[in-house]
Image (cartoon, rainbow, N blue to C red; front, side, top):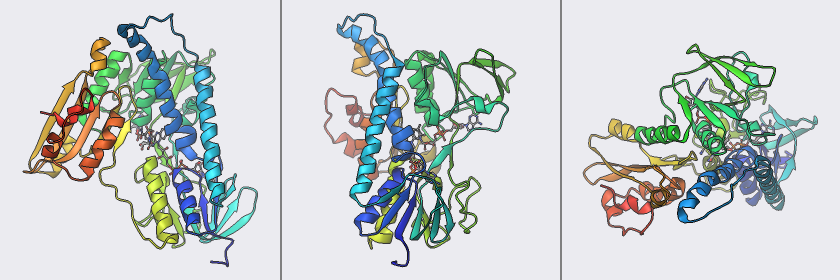
Length: 448
Ligand SMILES: Cc1cc2nc3c(=O)[nH]c(=O)nc-3n(C[C@H](O)[C@H](O)[C@H](O)COP(=O)(O)OP(=O)(O)OC[C@H]3O[C@@H](n4cnc5c(N)ncnc54)[C@H](O)[C@@H]3O)c2cc1C
Ligand SMILES: NC(=O)c1ccc[n+]([C@@H]2O[C@H](COP(=O)([O-])OP(=O)(O)OC[C@H]3O[C@@H](n4cnc5c(N)ncnc54)[C@H](O)[C@@H]3O)[C@@H](O)[C@H]2O)c1
Protein backbone atom coordinates (compact mmCIF):
# COMPACT_ATOMS: atom_id res chain seq x y z
CA UNK A 1 0.00 0.00 0.00
CA UNK A 2 3.08 2.25 0.13
CA UNK A 3 2.24 3.71 -3.31
CA UNK A 4 -0.59 5.59 -1.57
CA UNK A 5 -0.20 8.40 0.98
CA UNK A 6 -2.60 6.64 3.36
CA UNK A 7 -3.91 3.11 3.74
CA UNK A 8 -7.33 4.50 4.65
CA UNK A 9 -9.01 7.87 4.08
CA UNK A 10 -12.26 8.30 6.00
CA UNK A 11 -14.76 11.01 5.02
CA UNK A 12 -16.75 12.03 8.10
CA UNK A 13 -15.64 11.95 11.75
CA UNK A 14 -18.96 10.87 13.25
CA UNK A 15 -19.93 7.70 15.10
CA UNK A 16 -18.97 5.33 12.28
CA UNK A 17 -15.98 7.22 10.91
CA UNK A 18 -14.25 7.79 14.25
CA UNK A 19 -14.60 4.14 15.28
CA UNK A 20 -13.38 2.87 11.88
CA UNK A 21 -10.39 5.28 11.91
CA UNK A 22 -9.32 4.37 15.42
CA UNK A 23 -9.60 0.61 14.94
CA UNK A 24 -7.92 0.63 11.50
CA UNK A 25 -5.04 2.65 12.99
CA UNK A 26 -4.76 0.22 15.91
CA UNK A 27 -4.31 -2.55 13.32
CA UNK A 28 -1.31 -0.62 11.95
CA UNK A 29 -2.97 1.24 9.05
CA UNK A 30 -1.92 4.81 8.15
CA UNK A 31 -5.24 6.64 8.52
CA UNK A 32 -6.57 10.13 7.80
CA UNK A 33 -10.08 11.46 8.34
CA UNK A 34 -11.76 14.61 6.99
CA UNK A 35 -14.52 16.39 8.92
CA UNK A 36 -16.30 19.44 7.51
CA UNK A 37 -18.23 20.37 10.67
CA UNK A 38 -17.13 19.10 14.07
CA UNK A 39 -15.38 15.93 15.20
CA UNK A 40 -17.89 13.62 16.90
CA UNK A 41 -20.56 13.92 14.20
CA UNK A 42 -24.31 14.14 14.62
CA UNK A 43 -24.66 12.03 17.76
CA UNK A 44 -22.17 13.99 19.83
CA UNK A 45 -22.60 17.48 18.38
CA UNK A 46 -26.29 17.78 17.47
CA UNK A 47 -28.00 14.47 18.16
CA UNK A 48 -28.16 11.84 20.88
CA UNK A 49 -25.96 13.54 23.47
CA UNK A 50 -27.33 17.12 23.59
CA UNK A 51 -30.85 15.70 23.07
CA UNK A 52 -30.56 13.41 26.10
CA UNK A 53 -29.20 16.27 28.20
CA UNK A 54 -32.21 18.39 27.21
CA UNK A 55 -34.49 15.49 28.14
CA UNK A 56 -32.92 15.42 31.60
CA UNK A 57 -33.02 19.21 31.88
CA UNK A 58 -36.66 19.51 30.87
CA UNK A 59 -37.89 16.67 33.07
CA UNK A 60 -37.05 18.68 36.19
CA UNK A 61 -40.28 20.58 35.51
CA UNK A 62 -42.31 17.50 36.49
CA UNK A 63 -39.85 16.35 39.13
CA UNK A 64 -39.99 19.70 40.92
CA UNK A 65 -43.76 19.66 40.79
CA UNK A 66 -43.98 16.08 42.09
CA UNK A 67 -41.43 16.78 44.81
CA UNK A 68 -44.09 18.69 46.74
CA UNK A 69 -45.99 15.46 47.33
CA UNK A 70 -42.78 14.08 48.84
CA UNK A 71 -42.65 16.92 51.35
CA UNK A 72 -40.39 19.37 49.53
CA UNK A 73 -41.68 22.88 49.78
CA UNK A 74 -39.77 25.09 47.40
CA UNK A 75 -39.95 28.71 46.53
CA UNK A 76 -41.33 29.13 43.00
CA UNK A 77 -38.91 27.38 40.65
CA UNK A 78 -37.74 29.32 37.63
CA UNK A 79 -36.08 28.11 34.47
CA UNK A 80 -33.41 29.78 32.35
CA UNK A 81 -33.04 28.34 28.85
CA UNK A 82 -29.72 30.13 28.31
CA UNK A 83 -28.15 28.26 31.23
CA UNK A 84 -29.32 24.85 30.06
CA UNK A 85 -28.40 25.53 26.41
CA UNK A 86 -24.93 26.86 27.28
CA UNK A 87 -24.12 24.07 29.76
CA UNK A 88 -25.15 21.47 27.20
CA UNK A 89 -23.01 23.23 24.56
CA UNK A 90 -20.04 23.21 26.95
CA UNK A 91 -20.43 19.47 27.53
CA UNK A 92 -20.59 18.92 23.77
CA UNK A 93 -17.36 20.95 23.40
CA UNK A 94 -15.71 18.76 26.04
CA UNK A 95 -16.73 15.58 24.25
CA UNK A 96 -15.62 16.95 20.89
CA UNK A 97 -12.20 17.53 22.43
CA UNK A 98 -12.08 13.96 23.74
CA UNK A 99 -12.96 12.53 20.31
CA UNK A 100 -10.17 14.62 18.74
CA UNK A 101 -7.77 13.38 21.41
CA UNK A 102 -8.69 9.76 20.78
CA UNK A 103 -7.96 10.18 17.08
CA UNK A 104 -4.65 11.93 17.86
CA UNK A 105 -3.62 9.25 20.38
CA UNK A 106 -4.19 6.65 17.69
CA UNK A 107 -2.10 8.64 15.18
CA UNK A 108 -5.07 9.33 12.91
CA UNK A 109 -4.49 12.54 10.96
CA UNK A 110 -7.52 14.84 11.06
CA UNK A 111 -8.28 17.31 8.24
CA UNK A 112 -10.91 19.76 9.47
CA UNK A 113 -12.41 20.44 6.07
CA UNK A 114 -14.73 18.96 3.49
CA UNK A 115 -13.50 16.10 1.29
CA UNK A 116 -14.91 14.69 -1.92
CA UNK A 117 -14.07 11.56 -3.84
CA UNK A 118 -12.18 12.08 -7.11
CA UNK A 119 -11.28 8.48 -7.98
CA UNK A 120 -11.27 4.94 -6.60
CA UNK A 121 -8.14 5.84 -4.62
CA UNK A 122 -8.22 9.61 -4.36
CA UNK A 123 -10.00 12.39 -2.52
CA UNK A 124 -9.81 16.16 -2.74
CA UNK A 125 -9.95 18.45 0.28
CA UNK A 126 -11.74 21.81 0.22
CA UNK A 127 -8.30 23.46 0.33
CA UNK A 128 -7.60 21.85 -3.04
CA UNK A 129 -5.13 19.23 -1.83
CA UNK A 130 -5.45 15.86 -3.58
CA UNK A 131 -4.75 12.81 -1.40
CA UNK A 132 -4.35 9.18 -2.39
CA UNK A 133 -5.41 6.20 -0.28
CA UNK A 134 -5.60 2.45 -0.77
CA UNK A 135 -9.13 2.47 0.69
CA UNK A 136 -11.77 5.17 1.12
CA UNK A 137 -14.54 4.94 3.71
CA UNK A 138 -17.68 7.06 3.24
CA UNK A 139 -19.07 7.85 6.70
CA UNK A 140 -20.83 11.13 5.95
CA UNK A 141 -24.05 10.39 7.84
CA UNK A 142 -27.46 11.83 6.97
CA UNK A 143 -29.00 15.27 6.70
CA UNK A 144 -32.42 16.50 7.96
CA UNK A 145 -35.06 16.43 5.22
CA UNK A 146 -37.03 19.60 4.49
CA UNK A 147 -40.01 19.40 2.10
CA UNK A 148 -40.18 21.45 -1.06
CA UNK A 149 -43.11 23.67 -0.17
CA UNK A 150 -43.48 27.44 -0.17
CA UNK A 151 -41.81 28.97 2.87
CA UNK A 152 -40.27 25.71 4.16
CA UNK A 153 -37.04 27.64 4.80
CA UNK A 154 -38.75 29.52 7.64
CA UNK A 155 -38.57 26.30 9.66
CA UNK A 156 -35.50 24.95 11.41
CA UNK A 157 -34.16 21.40 11.76
CA UNK A 158 -32.43 19.45 14.50
CA UNK A 159 -29.19 21.06 13.25
CA UNK A 160 -30.31 24.40 14.69
CA UNK A 161 -32.57 23.41 17.56
CA UNK A 162 -29.80 23.07 20.15
CA UNK A 163 -28.68 26.68 19.83
CA UNK A 164 -31.98 28.58 19.91
CA UNK A 165 -31.37 32.15 21.13
CA UNK A 166 -34.56 31.90 23.16
CA UNK A 167 -37.37 29.44 23.76
CA UNK A 168 -40.45 30.05 21.61
CA UNK A 169 -43.86 30.44 23.22
CA UNK A 170 -45.39 28.11 20.63
CA UNK A 171 -43.77 25.40 18.50
CA UNK A 172 -45.06 23.29 15.65
CA UNK A 173 -43.12 20.09 15.09
CA UNK A 174 -43.60 18.44 11.71
CA UNK A 175 -43.18 14.65 11.78
CA UNK A 176 -44.20 11.75 13.93
CA UNK A 177 -40.94 9.91 14.46
CA UNK A 178 -38.10 9.91 16.94
CA UNK A 179 -37.06 13.55 16.79
CA UNK A 180 -40.61 14.90 16.70
CA UNK A 181 -41.69 12.99 19.82
CA UNK A 182 -38.49 13.66 21.72
CA UNK A 183 -38.64 17.41 21.10
CA UNK A 184 -42.39 17.51 21.75
CA UNK A 185 -41.58 16.16 25.22
CA UNK A 186 -38.66 18.53 25.80
CA UNK A 187 -40.44 21.70 24.65
CA UNK A 188 -43.68 20.84 26.43
CA UNK A 189 -41.88 20.35 29.75
CA UNK A 190 -40.15 23.70 29.26
CA UNK A 191 -43.49 25.45 28.94
CA UNK A 192 -43.69 25.78 25.15
CA UNK A 193 -47.15 25.17 23.65
CA UNK A 194 -46.44 22.27 21.29
CA UNK A 195 -48.33 20.98 18.27
CA UNK A 196 -47.02 17.81 16.68
CA UNK A 197 -48.25 17.63 13.12
CA UNK A 198 -47.94 14.44 11.12
CA UNK A 199 -49.17 13.53 7.67
CA UNK A 200 -50.01 9.93 8.62
CA UNK A 201 -52.67 8.41 10.84
CA UNK A 202 -50.07 7.02 13.26
CA UNK A 203 -46.83 8.13 14.86
CA UNK A 204 -43.73 6.02 15.49
CA UNK A 205 -44.74 3.42 12.93
CA UNK A 206 -42.01 0.91 13.77
CA UNK A 207 -43.19 0.64 17.39
CA UNK A 208 -45.92 -1.56 18.87
CA UNK A 209 -49.37 -0.01 18.36
CA UNK A 210 -50.57 -0.27 21.97
CA UNK A 211 -47.38 1.27 23.32
CA UNK A 212 -47.66 4.14 20.84
CA UNK A 213 -51.35 4.62 21.71
CA UNK A 214 -50.32 5.01 25.35
CA UNK A 215 -47.79 7.71 24.37
CA UNK A 216 -50.42 9.55 22.31
CA UNK A 217 -52.79 9.41 25.25
CA UNK A 218 -50.25 10.62 27.83
CA UNK A 219 -48.87 13.30 25.48
CA UNK A 220 -52.41 14.61 25.02
CA UNK A 221 -52.94 14.76 28.79
CA UNK A 222 -49.69 16.64 29.19
CA UNK A 223 -50.96 19.26 26.75
CA UNK A 224 -49.27 18.27 23.48
CA UNK A 225 -51.63 18.83 20.58
CA UNK A 226 -51.12 15.93 18.12
CA UNK A 227 -52.64 16.39 14.68
CA UNK A 228 -52.87 13.37 12.40
CA UNK A 229 -53.40 13.27 8.62
CA UNK A 230 -52.30 16.86 8.40
CA UNK A 231 -49.74 18.20 5.97
CA UNK A 232 -48.52 21.65 5.12
CA UNK A 233 -49.31 23.67 2.02
CA UNK A 234 -47.32 26.82 2.76
CA UNK A 235 -45.55 28.74 5.50
CA UNK A 236 -45.48 32.54 5.65
CA UNK A 237 -43.53 34.75 7.98
CA UNK A 238 -45.37 37.69 9.54
CA UNK A 239 -43.92 41.08 10.42
CA UNK A 240 -43.56 40.14 14.09
CA UNK A 241 -41.48 37.07 13.12
CA UNK A 242 -44.24 34.53 13.83
CA UNK A 243 -45.17 31.96 11.19
CA UNK A 244 -48.51 31.11 9.65
CA UNK A 245 -48.84 27.55 8.41
CA UNK A 246 -51.55 26.69 5.96
CA UNK A 247 -52.54 23.01 6.17
CA UNK A 248 -54.22 20.63 3.72
CA UNK A 249 -57.20 20.57 6.10
CA UNK A 250 -57.96 24.17 5.20
CA UNK A 251 -56.92 25.65 8.52
CA UNK A 252 -54.02 27.82 9.56
CA UNK A 253 -51.71 27.33 12.52
CA UNK A 254 -49.81 30.26 13.96
CA UNK A 255 -46.52 29.53 15.65
CA UNK A 256 -43.23 31.05 16.75
CA UNK A 257 -41.11 28.07 15.72
CA UNK A 258 -41.44 25.33 13.13
CA UNK A 259 -39.19 22.28 13.53
CA UNK A 260 -38.89 19.88 10.61
CA UNK A 261 -38.46 16.34 11.95
CA UNK A 262 -39.58 14.33 8.94
CA UNK A 263 -36.62 12.01 8.49
CA UNK A 264 -32.96 12.19 7.52
CA UNK A 265 -31.63 11.71 3.99
CA UNK A 266 -28.29 9.97 3.34
CA UNK A 267 -25.61 12.64 3.00
CA UNK A 268 -24.13 11.63 -0.34
CA UNK A 269 -24.94 14.59 -2.60
CA UNK A 270 -21.96 16.35 -4.18
CA UNK A 271 -19.50 13.79 -2.83
CA UNK A 272 -18.34 12.77 -6.31
CA UNK A 273 -19.57 9.20 -5.86
CA UNK A 274 -21.58 9.02 -9.11
CA UNK A 275 -18.54 10.20 -11.06
CA UNK A 276 -16.44 7.27 -9.83
CA UNK A 277 -19.30 4.84 -10.44
CA UNK A 278 -20.41 4.11 -6.84
CA UNK A 279 -24.00 2.81 -6.93
CA UNK A 280 -26.52 4.93 -5.00
CA UNK A 281 -30.10 4.08 -4.06
CA UNK A 282 -33.08 6.28 -5.04
CA UNK A 283 -32.83 7.96 -1.63
CA UNK A 284 -29.14 8.72 -2.20
CA UNK A 285 -28.01 5.90 0.10
CA UNK A 286 -24.62 4.38 -0.71
CA UNK A 287 -25.29 0.77 -1.69
CA UNK A 288 -23.11 -1.73 0.16
CA UNK A 289 -23.01 -5.46 0.83
CA UNK A 290 -22.85 -7.12 4.26
CA UNK A 291 -19.12 -6.38 4.19
CA UNK A 292 -19.83 -2.60 3.85
CA UNK A 293 -18.12 -2.61 0.43
CA UNK A 294 -19.59 -0.65 -2.50
CA UNK A 295 -19.43 -1.83 -6.12
CA UNK A 296 -16.08 0.00 -6.38
CA UNK A 297 -13.75 -2.43 -4.57
CA UNK A 298 -11.59 0.21 -2.81
CA UNK A 299 -14.59 2.24 -1.55
CA UNK A 300 -16.62 1.25 1.54
CA UNK A 301 -19.44 2.97 3.45
CA UNK A 302 -20.87 2.70 6.96
CA UNK A 303 -23.51 4.39 9.09
CA UNK A 304 -26.46 6.62 8.18
CA UNK A 305 -25.20 7.28 4.65
CA UNK A 306 -26.05 3.66 3.82
CA UNK A 307 -29.57 4.11 5.31
CA UNK A 308 -29.72 0.65 6.82
CA UNK A 309 -30.44 1.49 10.47
CA UNK A 310 -29.91 5.14 11.45
CA UNK A 311 -28.62 4.61 14.98
CA UNK A 312 -25.28 5.40 16.57
CA UNK A 313 -24.49 1.94 17.97
CA UNK A 314 -25.08 0.51 14.48
CA UNK A 315 -22.79 3.05 12.77
CA UNK A 316 -20.15 2.22 15.40
CA UNK A 317 -20.49 -1.53 14.87
CA UNK A 318 -20.35 -1.18 11.09
CA UNK A 319 -17.23 1.01 11.34
CA UNK A 320 -15.58 -1.47 13.70
CA UNK A 321 -16.46 -4.50 11.54
CA UNK A 322 -15.12 -2.71 8.44
CA UNK A 323 -11.79 -1.92 10.13
CA UNK A 324 -11.37 -5.44 11.55
CA UNK A 325 -12.26 -6.99 8.19
CA UNK A 326 -10.03 -4.86 5.97
CA UNK A 327 -7.09 -4.11 8.27
CA UNK A 328 -7.31 -6.64 11.13
CA UNK A 329 -7.42 -9.86 9.13
CA UNK A 330 -10.72 -10.66 10.86
CA UNK A 331 -13.58 -10.54 8.33
CA UNK A 332 -16.88 -10.07 10.10
CA UNK A 333 -20.33 -8.60 9.56
CA UNK A 334 -22.84 -6.84 11.81
CA UNK A 335 -25.80 -8.80 13.15
CA UNK A 336 -28.94 -6.64 12.84
CA UNK A 337 -31.26 -8.98 14.80
CA UNK A 338 -32.86 -7.72 17.98
CA UNK A 339 -31.56 -4.14 18.01
CA UNK A 340 -32.83 -2.46 21.18
CA UNK A 341 -34.12 1.07 20.58
CA UNK A 342 -35.65 3.86 22.63
CA UNK A 343 -37.60 7.02 21.94
CA UNK A 344 -36.71 9.54 24.64
CA UNK A 345 -40.19 10.97 24.67
CA UNK A 346 -41.94 11.80 27.96
CA UNK A 347 -42.42 9.09 29.12
CA UNK A 348 -39.87 7.17 27.06
CA UNK A 349 -40.60 4.11 24.94
CA UNK A 350 -38.15 1.22 24.60
CA UNK A 351 -38.39 -1.82 22.44
CA UNK A 352 -36.57 -4.90 21.21
CA UNK A 353 -37.64 -7.58 18.74
CA UNK A 354 -40.98 -8.01 17.01
CA UNK A 355 -44.08 -5.93 17.67
CA UNK A 356 -47.31 -7.86 18.22
CA UNK A 357 -48.35 -7.22 14.60
CA UNK A 358 -44.99 -8.38 13.21
CA UNK A 359 -45.05 -11.52 15.35
CA UNK A 360 -48.61 -12.40 14.31
CA UNK A 361 -47.60 -12.07 10.65
CA UNK A 362 -44.55 -14.31 11.16
CA UNK A 363 -45.72 -17.00 13.64
CA UNK A 364 -48.90 -19.11 13.85
CA UNK A 365 -49.07 -19.10 17.66
CA UNK A 366 -48.35 -15.84 19.37
CA UNK A 367 -49.27 -14.93 22.92
CA UNK A 368 -49.10 -11.57 24.64
CA UNK A 369 -48.31 -10.94 28.28
CA UNK A 370 -48.76 -7.49 29.77
CA UNK A 371 -48.31 -5.41 32.82
CA UNK A 372 -50.26 -2.15 32.93
CA UNK A 373 -49.23 -0.36 36.11
CA UNK A 374 -48.62 2.98 37.76
CA UNK A 375 -45.02 3.46 38.90
CA UNK A 376 -44.84 3.73 42.69
CA UNK A 377 -43.31 7.18 42.41
CA UNK A 378 -46.20 8.37 40.23
CA UNK A 379 -48.75 7.01 42.72
CA UNK A 380 -47.41 9.07 45.61
CA UNK A 381 -46.93 12.04 43.30
CA UNK A 382 -50.62 11.72 42.40
CA UNK A 383 -49.59 11.61 38.76
CA UNK A 384 -52.16 9.66 36.83
CA UNK A 385 -49.79 8.19 34.29
CA UNK A 386 -49.64 4.45 33.69
CA UNK A 387 -46.73 2.45 32.34
CA UNK A 388 -47.32 -0.45 29.96
CA UNK A 389 -44.97 -3.41 29.51
CA UNK A 390 -45.75 -5.89 26.80
CA UNK A 391 -44.08 -9.22 26.10
CA UNK A 392 -44.64 -10.99 22.77
CA UNK A 393 -43.97 -14.75 22.86
CA UNK A 394 -44.13 -17.33 20.08
CA UNK A 395 -44.23 -21.11 19.77
CA UNK A 396 -45.02 -23.92 22.20
CA UNK A 397 -42.03 -23.03 24.38
CA UNK A 398 -43.12 -19.38 24.55
CA UNK A 399 -39.88 -17.91 23.31
CA UNK A 400 -39.81 -14.15 23.93
CA UNK A 401 -39.63 -12.54 20.48
CA UNK A 402 -40.45 -8.97 21.48
CA UNK A 403 -40.46 -6.72 24.50
CA UNK A 404 -42.07 -3.27 24.42
CA UNK A 405 -42.13 -0.78 27.27
CA UNK A 406 -43.45 2.68 27.93
CA UNK A 407 -42.85 4.24 31.31
CA UNK A 408 -40.22 6.03 33.38
CA UNK A 409 -36.63 4.98 32.59
CA UNK A 410 -37.81 2.35 30.10
CA UNK A 411 -34.62 2.73 28.04
CA UNK A 412 -32.49 1.93 31.08
CA UNK A 413 -34.66 -1.07 31.91
CA UNK A 414 -34.84 -2.50 28.39
CA UNK A 415 -31.09 -2.68 27.69
CA UNK A 416 -30.58 -5.51 30.20
CA UNK A 417 -33.76 -7.33 29.19
CA UNK A 418 -32.69 -7.14 25.53
CA UNK A 419 -29.85 -9.55 26.36
CA UNK A 420 -32.43 -12.16 27.32
CA UNK A 421 -34.47 -11.59 24.16
CA UNK A 422 -31.37 -11.73 21.97
CA UNK A 423 -30.31 -14.94 23.73
CA UNK A 424 -33.65 -16.52 22.82
CA UNK A 425 -34.93 -17.02 26.38
CA UNK A 426 -38.53 -18.01 27.13
CA UNK A 427 -41.35 -16.62 29.24
CA UNK A 428 -40.54 -19.36 31.76
CA UNK A 429 -36.93 -18.09 32.03
CA UNK A 430 -38.29 -14.66 32.89
CA UNK A 431 -40.74 -16.19 35.42
CA UNK A 432 -37.93 -18.24 37.01
CA UNK A 433 -36.02 -15.06 37.80
CA UNK A 434 -36.79 -13.64 41.23
CA UNK A 435 -38.21 -10.11 41.21
CA UNK A 436 -36.06 -7.23 42.42
CA UNK A 437 -38.46 -5.42 44.70
CA UNK A 438 -39.59 -2.68 44.70
CA UNK A 439 -38.71 -1.66 41.18
CA UNK A 440 -40.43 -1.05 37.86
CA UNK A 441 -38.25 -3.64 36.13
CA UNK A 442 -39.65 -6.42 38.34
CA UNK A 443 -42.78 -6.19 36.16
CA UNK A 444 -40.71 -7.97 33.50
CA UNK A 445 -40.70 -11.18 35.55
CA UNK A 446 -44.27 -10.83 36.87
CA UNK A 447 -46.23 -10.45 33.64
CA UNK A 448 -49.61 -12.10 33.30
C1 LIG B 1 -31.57 15.01 17.00
C2 LIG B 1 -31.02 13.60 16.84
C3 LIG B 1 -31.07 12.75 17.92
C4 LIG B 1 -30.56 11.45 17.80
N1 LIG B 1 -30.65 10.63 18.89
C5 LIG B 1 -30.16 9.38 18.80
C6 LIG B 1 -30.20 8.51 19.93
O1 LIG B 1 -30.68 8.89 21.01
N2 LIG B 1 -29.67 7.26 19.80
C7 LIG B 1 -29.14 6.82 18.62
O2 LIG B 1 -28.66 5.68 18.56
N3 LIG B 1 -29.10 7.62 17.52
C8 LIG B 1 -29.59 8.88 17.58
N4 LIG B 1 -29.54 9.70 16.49
C9 LIG B 1 -28.97 9.16 15.22
C10 LIG B 1 -27.43 9.20 15.26
O3 LIG B 1 -27.00 10.51 15.55
C11 LIG B 1 -26.87 8.74 13.92
O4 LIG B 1 -27.41 7.47 13.59
C12 LIG B 1 -25.35 8.62 13.95
O5 LIG B 1 -24.75 9.85 14.29
C13 LIG B 1 -24.83 8.14 12.58
O6 LIG B 1 -23.43 8.12 12.58
P1 LIG B 1 -22.63 8.29 11.21
O7 LIG B 1 -21.20 8.05 11.55
O8 LIG B 1 -23.25 7.48 10.16
O9 LIG B 1 -22.86 9.80 10.79
P2 LIG B 1 -22.63 11.18 11.60
O10 LIG B 1 -22.48 10.97 13.06
O11 LIG B 1 -23.73 12.06 11.13
O12 LIG B 1 -21.24 11.68 11.04
C14 LIG B 1 -21.04 12.09 9.72
C15 LIG B 1 -20.01 13.20 9.72
O13 LIG B 1 -19.56 13.41 8.39
C16 LIG B 1 -19.34 14.78 8.20
N5 LIG B 1 -19.31 15.01 6.74
C17 LIG B 1 -20.34 14.85 5.88
N6 LIG B 1 -19.93 15.07 4.61
C18 LIG B 1 -18.61 15.37 4.68
C19 LIG B 1 -17.62 15.67 3.71
N7 LIG B 1 -17.89 15.70 2.41
N8 LIG B 1 -16.35 15.95 4.13
C20 LIG B 1 -16.05 15.92 5.46
N9 LIG B 1 -16.95 15.63 6.41
C21 LIG B 1 -18.21 15.34 6.04
C22 LIG B 1 -20.47 15.44 8.95
O14 LIG B 1 -20.18 16.79 9.26
C23 LIG B 1 -20.58 14.55 10.18
O15 LIG B 1 -19.80 15.04 11.25
C24 LIG B 1 -30.01 11.01 16.56
C25 LIG B 1 -29.95 11.88 15.47
C26 LIG B 1 -30.46 13.16 15.61
C27 LIG B 1 -30.40 14.09 14.44
N1 LIG C 1 -33.71 7.84 20.17
C1 LIG C 1 -33.13 7.53 19.02
O1 LIG C 1 -32.54 6.48 18.85
C2 LIG C 1 -33.18 8.51 17.88
C3 LIG C 1 -33.52 9.83 18.12
C4 LIG C 1 -33.57 10.71 17.04
C5 LIG C 1 -33.25 10.26 15.76
N2 LIG C 1 -32.91 8.97 15.58
C6 LIG C 1 -32.62 8.46 14.22
O2 LIG C 1 -32.67 9.50 13.29
C7 LIG C 1 -33.63 9.20 12.27
C8 LIG C 1 -34.30 10.46 11.83
O3 LIG C 1 -35.22 10.92 12.83
P1 LIG C 1 -36.58 11.61 12.41
O4 LIG C 1 -37.41 11.74 13.63
O5 LIG C 1 -36.30 12.81 11.58
O6 LIG C 1 -37.21 10.56 11.40
P2 LIG C 1 -38.18 9.30 11.58
O7 LIG C 1 -37.92 8.44 10.41
O8 LIG C 1 -38.10 8.71 12.94
O9 LIG C 1 -39.63 9.94 11.47
C9 LIG C 1 -40.03 10.71 10.39
C10 LIG C 1 -41.49 11.00 10.57
O10 LIG C 1 -41.90 12.07 9.74
C11 LIG C 1 -43.10 11.73 9.07
N3 LIG C 1 -43.06 12.48 7.80
C12 LIG C 1 -42.32 12.18 6.71
N4 LIG C 1 -42.50 13.12 5.76
C13 LIG C 1 -43.36 14.04 6.29
C14 LIG C 1 -43.91 15.25 5.82
N5 LIG C 1 -43.62 15.72 4.60
N6 LIG C 1 -44.75 15.95 6.64
C15 LIG C 1 -45.03 15.49 7.88
N7 LIG C 1 -44.54 14.33 8.38
C16 LIG C 1 -43.71 13.63 7.61
C17 LIG C 1 -43.04 10.23 8.94
O11 LIG C 1 -44.32 9.69 8.78
C18 LIG C 1 -42.41 9.84 10.27
O12 LIG C 1 -43.38 9.75 11.27
C19 LIG C 1 -34.57 8.20 12.92
O13 LIG C 1 -35.17 7.36 11.97
C20 LIG C 1 -33.66 7.43 13.84
O14 LIG C 1 -33.08 6.37 13.14
C21 LIG C 1 -32.87 8.09 16.61
